Image: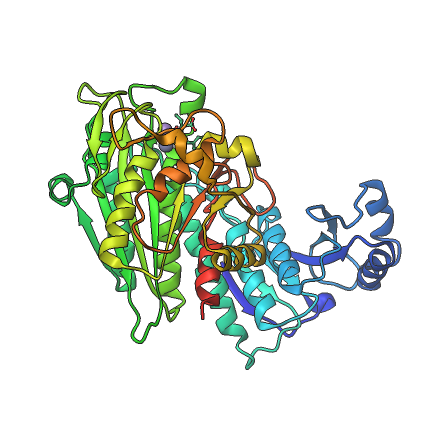
Length: 489
Ligand code: BES
Ligand code: MN
Ligand code: ZN
């Protein structure tokens, strides 16, 4: 989709469809409708809005035939509720427009205020909203969507608006890259092909990507990762992408859970819980999406993405409940339930990242626990860290990007649940506080590094679209991670 700036106004627009914001507050609603009817003709919108119960509420939209003085064919009225933040409104407009316009080719959008921030946001919304997963559809054309979008009443030169379009696009494309990886079926996306996808994207962006095969992983001593891999016919991979701009003062390492399929291992999942388990590499996808976006935006921060990838299967060599393995960190771990595999993979990768990269901050993304969804619902991720200022800045970044997180406690009391009678640690802590005990387990492996754990089991993959998040793989976490990096001082 081509996005460009246009000096044209609503009545001069010749696009197939034009998006306009409509607030919900009574007086503002009437004023907005009045302003649109000044172009489309008196009484052309209001009766229809009443009939369709369109009240300008957030996430409400109304598509009407334009007519009147405008050359556009359709208008899309986008409810924005009582949102006044022009950046958020712009994002919603772009997103609503691109998702609604499947049959139209050209679009235009009227922003309440044209600024660098709002132009960036509308571009991001447009590219993210146009996302469809079509890799396996023979007929890709029928869901092709918009080919061009104009931002109305925008000066073409100066003020950095063209650069803002590029930024918004790069960001959304990184989110979409993560979505594609999550949506790709697990017969085609395995640890080996995931590593290839990371390498080829790294090559395009001029980043270094090192990939470890099984024998290298053995040499490094990642026995927990190897235990999880034992039941799979496909080798594991550790993938490490580095973005190191000259003069960077801060170093941030992102770590991702890359289970390309989680059958549960010998403690096998019931069919209904297994169906979506291709999504168990969404943490890896987010991690890669962030480092690629950082490179595209040329952020002045050193960023690493380290991914531990394997399947969790039931082959005859599969690891068993009762097994004990020595982690890379040195602690021995008693396996209780082979379906709690993610924390084992992450434990070794976190230790390696902390020791070898010595980052200023280490942040992991993982579809780690069903318990997290029990606690927070399907659309919100859990955030764990001991560092108050890190939590605060991450939550602020998430708010700007419209992604929902909730800080959860690393409750010391629950540590007792991870005691094993015969090893240093058990890897699960029982039913209650399951997301917390998983986080506490990870904490045993982070060495002395400042760390944050994000359990994205809920929002990483959705049965149906919700707000900004599409059905299927959502790319959740990418936008917030990048915004956090941008805000770093
Ligand atoms: N990958 C799952 C967690 C998950 C569940 C992600 C639903 C996305 C949607 C994880 O490996 C798992 O199976 N966790 C178990 C842990 C339990 C055995 C302690 C769970 O949450 O049931
Ligand atoms: Mn599992
Ligand atoms: Zn899993």
